[in-house]
Image 1 (cartoon, rainbow, N blue to C red):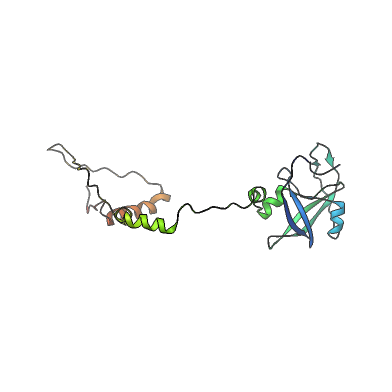
Image 2 (image 1 turned 180 degrees about the vertical axis):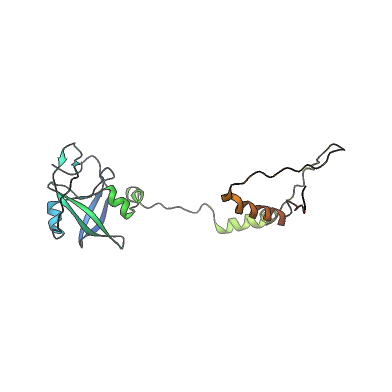
Amino acid sequence: MFIGCMLAKRPKIEMKVNGKPFKFELDTGADNMVLTVKDWAEIGRPALKPVKVRLEAYGGGSLKLKGQCMVSVEADDKTYELPLLVAGCVGAPLLGMRWIADMQVEVNKLIFGKSVVKAMYSKQKLDAVLDEFSEVFSPGLGHCSKLKAEIRTQPNAEPRFSKPRPIPFAYLEGIKEELQRAEEVGILERIPESR
């Protein structure tokens, strides 16, 4: 019985297990990390504990497990103590989801390579636009010079007091800050007393 399949070329990641270098094939379909008995012997035959886990190979057959041990894993200048299953089969060491999650392996980086974001603008062009339209990008409140607005009311209209809506406690501090900011720039005016 073989671990893994030959359907696609899998990305590989180099790590040291108990000080011995290995190239692991990325296998996001595998939950556990499995090494063969031969590889287990190379890492110094750490003590095995019995396991009650049943693993299925890619083709559907079950893997005969010899046991489980804890190993020291070195990757990207970090060291982890992780569980390892040992199976009596042949195949490449597979990096399963448990180790991927525990070591926070960047799977996309392994599959697609480094992502490079190129600047969409130059600093000089940005500065030129900011200078040319400095009024638009200046701090503070702007003004509309193209339109005139007028609020019409009935001649006998009287101001009416409306109770404020209840605000969730989590939003209270943010709303207070925004009201303060709006008052400072002249959008709102504080009313000293209400009925």
